[in-house]
Length: 257
Image (cartoon, rainbow, N blue to C red):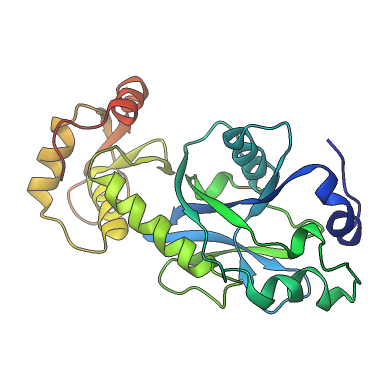
């Protein structure tokens, strides 16, 4: 695989190596301070922010490309990654792609340059442990930041729409599949798990019904330890039974929320 040393080299020569007119955008969700957050990058020489994105090598499977892009952007690998939507609006790139790709850097390109063509993008979302992400900027970005899902900055192209579609899909999946592993610490309390679900769903849940429902799925192990340093009665700590969690992730729950 080639290693591009500059944006100019990538934009002028990348078409030799990548599948034309198809890209991948990754919505990377993390949970911190009871807030659902998304990892965004500051695009080089552009006022807006964007999603970690990339292209597919001509001999590369699309899921493998998504995993590679995620690892390049976050340092993480072998984590939950879900394809959720294809974005193909005819005007999704409009003049922004020209501005980002060439005008801001004063790069001259022929009208048929590969980055000036119409692009479809395949959306993936990832659920990651906020504390373990080791993002770093590259030739395409100036900086990375976590942003609250309800307070996003100005976004490039249709990336704001992609984030909202990813959130809608995550909410739908939450009703039939387990969520929590990679978003919570290894040990957590039932109120902490409930807060995660409430944050994703955007609504309050009944405490007793939530606990009964979660325990019925048989994916949790109650530990002997209790949470220390709390003002009221210390709640028990739980962890996920990863074998049962993986089975539920593959087969789904028998009953939805």
